[in-house]
Image 1 (cartoon, rainbow, N blue to C red):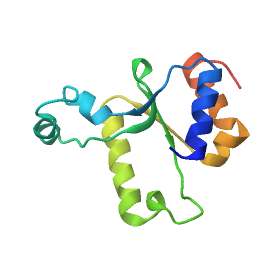
Image 2 (image 1 turned 180 degrees about the vertical axis):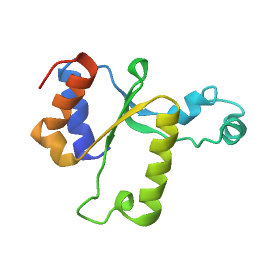
Image 3 (image 1 turned 90 degrees about the vertical axis):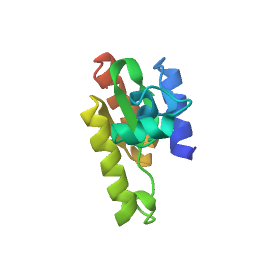
Amino acid sequence: MSKAEEMLALHLRAEGIPAEREYRFGAEAAGGPGKGLRDRLVRAGLKDWRFDFAIPDQMLAIEVEGGGWTQGRHTRGAGFQADLEKYDAAMRLGWTVYRCSPEMVKSGRAIGTIKTIVMGVAA
């Protein structure tokens, strides 16, 4: 877990927002983890994708996008494309995907936005 993800986990806990870490939305959409998962994922056209955080009952995914200033995996061609495919699959399954930067987490903007989405509370 990155430092920004650790910080966001603390913010979520402090606000009483029950988010799950490393939520395996691909596996859940394909019938849940367990025996036969690989075959079920292939049949469903999914991968065993994970969200940094998820609030499953609200179908809200939260992704902390790192590496923007360091040419990390998420900002280079193949990694960027893979992320877009993951977000496309998630949205086709009905998820709302909130993406934020480590800077947004540190400043408190991310938790403010998440509160607005989850609780309808303007930050």
